[in-house]
Length: 201
View 1: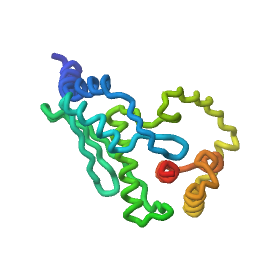
View 2: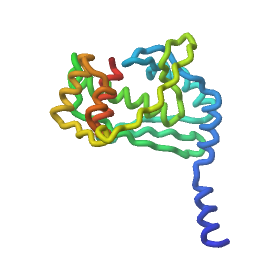
View 3: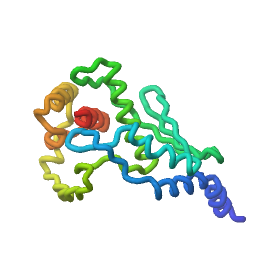
């Protein structure tokens, strides 16, 4: 067997085939999960609602998951029980977030819960958000993204001081995240933090 053929053979046999097959079968059965918990302009399924739906299906297809804190990051592991094959992802949690009426421990707990929900939904291919109510209405089509002008391309970065003010404005509902993004360029961490604040409202 030629070197390239051997390399391709070894790569193919190293793939978590049992996990992929079980995950694909799970995704064919799992429904859209929506319990109507209200967020900032949308509704979503919270973790208990998600677990209620997925746990029996995960068991049926021999799958499991765990989510572990690794320093300031959340590690999500989806595994195949029989073969031990696994897929992992790591999400960095934003730091130094302040939310009105919450102490540091409550903010940390809210942040972890928020990222657990999205990391698990992403890993398993779940649909847990909905833009309309639970009555089955079709969500309106999203407008085509507007092309950015030269002025918008040259937007200034959001400074630390402006970031603090942006958090307060979002918390007080005097501005939207989209309005902030039309005036400043946000880092990934800044945008995640502001999304967290907006999503908890």
